[in-house]
Image (cartoon, rainbow, N blue to C red; front, side, top):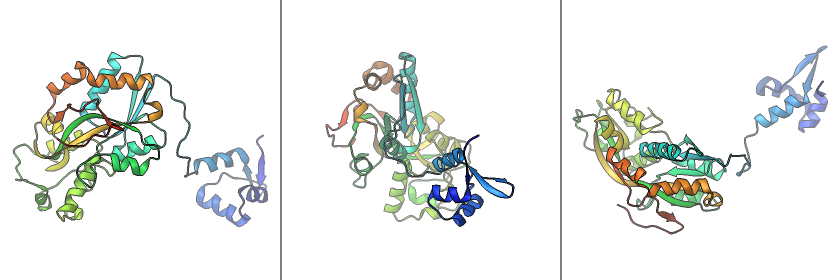
Length: 306
């Protein structure tokens, strides 16, 4: 049988007083059992309970990733989905796992060592660059940054624009309802920046808290008339036959752990950015530009916007 601790022994083990033990049983689910009216604590379950309740981990947690697996986390994109499908079809020895956690979520996952590549399109306060300020704030070791694509960001609206939406100011109309993207996504950050710039209180916009995980879900909400507008990319509006109000072209980047940059799987993935199989995808989508695709953005610093 595993070791059982008495209340006194557990208090000493946890460096707390005995009264606190009873509080932890009642309020925190501390593993315990009663035998002949006295509390006893299975030590192995207590240790597991401590581990499960740990909230502060080291920044770089070691985890074993098969050499054939590439883990990508960050902002989702339709062209990226197609790109990864081509990659796995062309290189069947590799598997790509993608986590849709938003641009900031991707950068933080890279910081924690939980992915090889983060995808991000975070517009900086200066409106001139993307991603760099957020990378420098989050990460001590600056990663490599390679451009995936440029894409057009704006408002997706219903076909024919029945609510006569011409800009963000029209979103506060009583008969307009929007659908939104989650916090930590680049699209939400841009949208909130624009609202702040023109003095619109988000609370005055109906549907502002109706968040969808992907651009495509935003478009479907509008297509099915559950919303009249939402921030998103032109590609989705084009695919679903919706209208679009353009705001700017944004740089959608791969942010890559420098320690893994020259690994064969990563280099093989990046090489596909220069191949016709990928570039021919543009025949099927609007709102993308590949003129910087595959180009090193950092440390070979790139300045300028479309």
